[in-house]
Image (tube, rainbow, N blue to C red; front, side):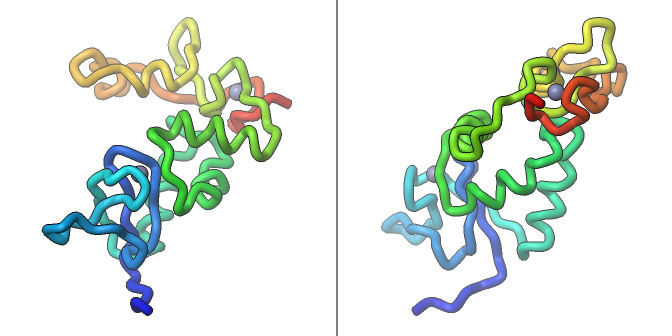
Length: 148
Ligand SMILES: [Zn+2]
Ligand SMILES: [Zn+2]
């Protein structure tokens, strides 16, 4: 049995994350996701992993992001949106329509779901980069992303 190393790895092209002891390897020894063979990135330990996750709460991710990520450990989805869909199927939650389930809306005139701004391609997102538009907690679901 392999020793459980402290390092945590996560997919670049998928949402899989796990202890580094669970990776698959290419013939040349490159660590990859055992499900989809995505290249992996690494953080030194579980604390820095959760720090990175929790930083996203209240911007492009809702309050229960931590729980969702905990649930999807070892599961490979092609992106966060798909992971959320599956998580909501399991938990029976319905996403809040006002914020599109991300828990935040823009402080712009229209107050679009923050996902709209977060997904703008680099180059078109000057308003976000410059802080002209900022995420605020969704007033309908109080930042939970869940339809009440
Ligand atoms: Zn994967
Ligand atoms: Zn909402």
